[in-house]
Length: 313
Image (cartoon, rainbow, N blue to C red):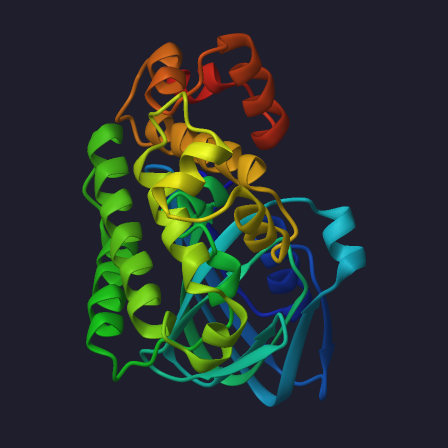
């Protein structure tokens, strides 16, 4: 994670600049078509639970391809979603079988824990927002569906999101951490709404995702506080047979109960990380957990640290 001190100044060596991106974002490999002159700059700061940064590069000769494959992921298990906004230049990005060509004002999200490729050259300037997975998952449970999908600068909601992102990266006034988390959370709400509005009716996705599953998920998320929620109660509320419910989630490689617990854990992480709940017991009970020991064990297994560490933070 970045801190206020993790600021990389100007570099005239691509290798040094690439090393800095590996340290601060994701370990990657690279290929250059020509070994010409290069200059780059990275600056970053924390904004509550988010990290916002600006990158610039100038490669006068040829294009550069950056690759994150399975071997790099095994060596580097950081697990975040990244919002990537280009405000100068021409950048190509590919992940999950989708590709996008980003120009000034365009943006995408991508998953740090999955392979991707990025290629760029000439002069480029970008903004990256690093988003802890639970904060994204609690707002957009199927965030993986939206990776490498272009949010165009011509989109009205995209323009709004880009404006908010620019404000975050330029914000220099010190904020109370709780206020910063609330502002960052609002920015993520806008991002999630933009992605849903832009791509929920996409033909490719409509063919692969049963609308009944989307309704079930909305119902579950709206009732996470209900500790007595079961497969039978969910199915009855949606006028489905329990067997149908199992089949809908099996198509995504999971089960209704496993998905329910994932959402409960993500929601509790979100509430603690953003300071909306400041007590671990309250976080557990608010999202349907009744066994506090089980909650703490599951939380640590999922996120790598105990829930009380978020309260201290």
